[in-house]
Image (cartoon, rainbow, N blue to C red; front, side, top):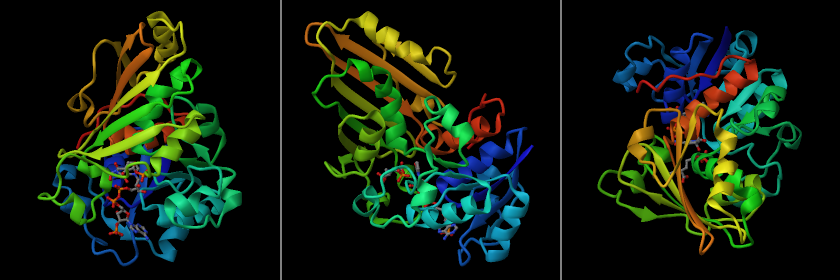
Length: 335
Ligand SMILES: NC(=O)C1=CN([C@@H]2O[C@H](COP(=O)(O)OP(=O)(O)OC[C@H]3O[C@@H](n4cnc5c(N)ncnc54)[C@H](OP(=O)(O)O)[C@@H]3O)[C@@H](O)[C@H]2O)C=CC1
Ligand SMILES: CC(=O)N[C@@H](CCC(=O)OP(=O)(O)O)C(=O)O
């Protein structure tokens, strides 16, 4: 049984991952951690999330002693923390020799020059970064097994790349256009004006400048136009993507392309039937639906995930289980 420490366990993704690992018979929880001066240190997780009353674990401050204990007793550490926090913690734990699964964006770009622009910091650990692999679970299993530094993808990139990567050989020079709507949990648990109840509506944000645009483009090896929207619901992402395919592409070519998911138990693909966010919320699944117009060559593919599950926690769990060679079958989340 592999023993996992979860840092940032009071946040949305950390708490979700705690519930998944708690329910998983092949994994145990070494401990739950928050920042050293957190207002929540010492509290039971169930005090923050009564839905998790079956998890009798408390939130510990991440002191130097706690870090040393993690290195001594854990097989892996999960960082469900902000990019600027993960940047340092990931490097430190990796250098101590334990596997790191980072939910932030601090290790997703191989190119150090991307970080000042998109994350506002200079990456101080190029050697650790060079070892990092991108944890898109259905695509990068071999790398996830081989590396101890796994950068779990962002929520929008997971939805978008799952839809687009199978089509890469069919794309033209016209840029794929991705319009995606996320629930408010995508912005994390901390209070912010734009995510407060009376402020949230349905609106685009980060237009032509969201950090997930270069993340998607890097992994797809093609530029895209990406427009995220904040929706007035709690969980889930729906990405609706329009692409122009190469002349002569048929429906049969698209069907064949998506056959790459025939053995992927968490991905379903439907033709002429579109997914709904409610069908994937609290599940580890990605539902894809597509329709193609052979006359014009335009394909619309929609991708639905739960941002806290396939977009973060359940994909992190997939990566952990792939890395340690456990069976990857997952049950639905129990939040
Ligand atoms: N929400 C989502 O849908 C997704 C989020 N992500 C990424 O996952 C990460 C976590 O996101 P999310 O769960 O939403 O964030 P939250 O804001 O909900 O949670 C952040 C957690 O980090 C803890 N924390 C903050 N500073 C430190 C520190 N110095 N040391 C240890 N713990 C610390 C917080 O507790 P405290 O402040 O009390 O210490 C809290 O537990 C982020 O990088 C985010 O970008 C990725 C995909 C999807
Ligand atoms: C609704 C909302 O605010 N969503 C977040 C994306 C969350 C995510 O995927 O996180 P990473 O920052 O780890 O990539 C945003 O747009 O910043």
